[in-house]
Image 1 (cartoon, rainbow, N blue to C red):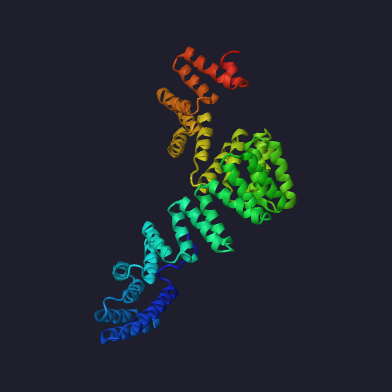
Image 2 (image 1 turned 90 degrees about the horizontal axis):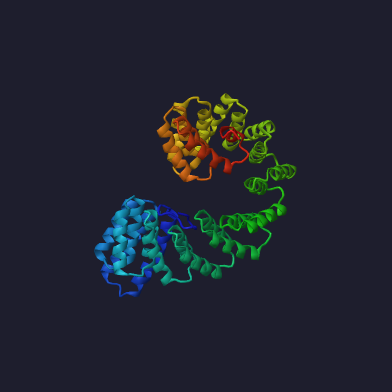
Length: 459
């Protein structure tokens, strides 16, 4: 849960401030009364407890407050003071009991409600804290600090409609709500509330259009909701506003890579290096683009440069491993895949790729099976990973088990030519040549330039 400026319950300054407020309230209450001996004695003991609090002698303070309650059990402020000390002494349960007693004496007693809210938030009782703060807001509707705290709780509970109303209410009372706006925006973005984030960012940019970071964030939000044209326009705008910000160039290159515009990726990266310092992600994107464009040998030094810049850049390691795999440098590929697996916390893509590299060569099939099984467990509906499992079983001669996995792969991705070809291979090995040819023909329809399939069909 995010915090908007309130202090935790173990903050001595907060508690002493509450004590001071309670003391003032107590003095006013007793001064307004007729001043009987019991009340006077209670006030004297209360003051003694407050002095002990200032000296941080909390056990003595508790003693004085408990004695005060013997003479005056009706005043809410004594219960609150005692509750504060029980909190400081690490007994929140007793503190909560005392606060409830205080509120039974005076249901709208602000110090009790404030401390109760702090206690509930500290204990993780967010819905209860929300109700307590709503009561405080009813008592003091113009208190911006209450509104901010309630806003934080509504966001934590993902009550975004209520949060948006509170944000607007705070903004009208506070001319400079920039920090609050950024905090609310961060919650919207991390919660996936991109439409709300877009509205808020547009309102912020209407007030200040010079914030390139906000323009960039808005562009990313538009991409998240599927408006890629608007999103890319804003990212390009942010890039032009600040040519020295590396992440804008990285975003542009990633967009072009996703479109398979590999030449454009290389151009964007080369332009970025004119304005920015070398960055591992830039070289990783360029190297991957060279590889996908068929320039495998050329991609090798570029990907190594990414790794040299950042020894934890597992994306570059995974890409370079694929290159070495295709260059038939299996040992180097294994070394890089193993590093990528460790650094990425066993990302399934690297587990799968390493397993498949071995499977197509008929190597290390038991190890390959173990790796592929982990990948499938992490992403059970990934057709490529299921296909790898099928191909490993094929290599082990387990035809029925191979078909089991390949059928699951086909169900997950019906238009994958490689899976259909693999199913044909299994049927061929099982002696079902007619069925095999059917799968080969379907695979060739999906991948008409595949010479291996043409040879299998004798075309």
